[in-house]
Length: 115
Image (cartoon, rainbow, N blue to C red):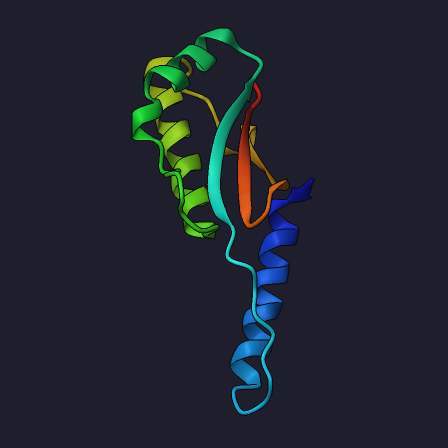
């Protein structure tokens, strides 16, 4: 499994190569599409809360990997947990694992929430 930082580093390098070698042969990045989202949550009340509000997730099936989507989803989760469960919940308790080995040109996301 690859971490989010590794994916974005590779995508950034690919973009840099593509942008800087426009007159040369360019390296193309694989456009992975989201296939599945799962949660790994230690606290059952937070897990229930996330599944109840899953329709509000920023992750949509078929979308490409974008850093902004992960940032928005983390903010959404923090706001939701603060409002309904723990007013002192912090963003550092939310992380994501991206798996690109799931299927060709597809990825899955596991949202990890620690209490």
